[in-house]
Image 1: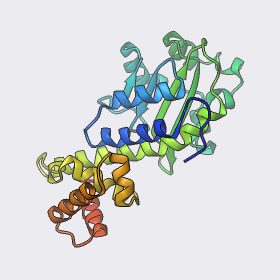
Image 2: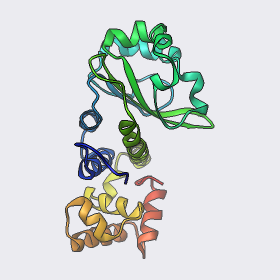
Image 3: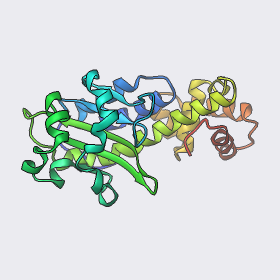
Image 4: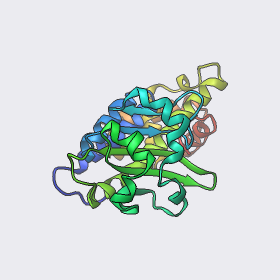
Length: 252
C-alpha cells in the first residue's frame, strides 16, 4: 500500500477497496462506492464508472452527480469526441486530461464546450483498462473550476484503487454469468460470507488477514472457508478457489 499523506489514511483506502468487493458480491451499492471515492479523492463534480469500453445498447455505466439528460448524447456521440481517445494506447492507466493537452486546447474542443462544461465539469482524472481490444473498463472523476486541478497524490491513490475496482466489476460480471447459466441460482451456491472469505483467500490472504478485513474472528473465517469447500466438493483451499473460479463465482 502506498504511503499516504494529509487526511487520507490507510484505513480509508482499505475500507473503500473492501466496499468495492462488497458491491461486487451484491452486499453494497456501487453508487455508494463512487460517492466514497469522490470524497476520498476530492471530486466535486460527476463520477462515472463504465464497465465496458464502448456504450452498450442498454446503458450500463454507474454514475453519480451526473445530469441524466446528457447520458443518451454521450452514448450516441460525445464518447467519440473525447480528445484523449486517440492517445489511449500510449497512456498510463491513470492520468489527468490537463497533463496531456494544454488547457487552452482542451477548452476549445467540442467535448468540453458541449458536453463537459454545461455539466460543471472542468478537469478530469481517469483510470482506464486498455488492452489489445482497446478501451475496456474506465473510471472518470471530475472537478469544477472551483477546485484546483488534480495533483500527484490523487493520481497515485487512483493507481492503487483502480485495479481493485476493475477486479470487483469482473467478480460482479462472473457472478451474474454464473447465475444466468444456473437459472439464477449460481451465486446462491455460496452464502455471502462464504464468498467473502473465499474471495480474500483467492487474493492471497491468510485467514488472519481475511479476518481483519472482514471484522471476523480467525475461527469464523476458517469455518466459512470450510463450509465453502464442502459445497464446492473441494479437498483444499486452492481447489475450492479453482472450483469457484470455474463456476464464475470469483474473479480470476
